[in-house]
Each structure stands twice: as structure tokens, then as C-alpha cells.
Length: 96
Image (tube, rainbow, N blue to C red; front, top):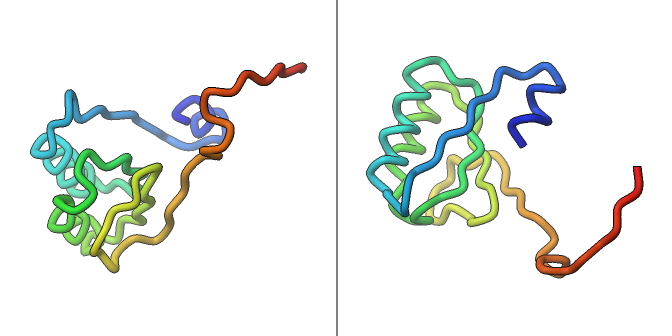
């Protein structure tokens, strides 16, 4: 995702929340919002516990996209996106 965004002219950074560290992910969201981030694509570690951080980011004007795991109980999501679960684990030959 990061490579595609950069290829299309976006300034993108990818962050990991470690081995399921909800507190780290919350700090990352707040820090990025404070640094003037325009958009966050979040693969939530905990789909419920991020509400305060998401509300904070939204108050700073950040667009919030929930990726793969739907962030629950929060009206401040702008979009939700995921992948085709039917094809997960399937082999598909790709020709370029």
C-alpha cells in the first residue's frame, strides 16, 4: 500500500503497532494527527479501544479509513475497506 501511494504522489509512511500493542497504536494515531497528517488508514489492533484516539484525530481534521478490521462504535470513520476474503489463500497466476 505504501509503495502504491508513493508512486501516485502521496507522502506516505507505514507504522506497525508491534505485537498487538493497542497503547502503541493509540500513541501513533495521536502523534500523526498532531504532526498534521491528512489521512489515516488504520488496521486496528483492537476494534473497540481506539475510539478516543480516532475522535482526537478527527477533531484535527484527519480522514479516517478503517482497513480490514472494522473499527466499531465510532461515528468518525470516513471509510471502511478490506480485501476479497474469498480469495485469501488461493493461488492466482498473474501476467504482466
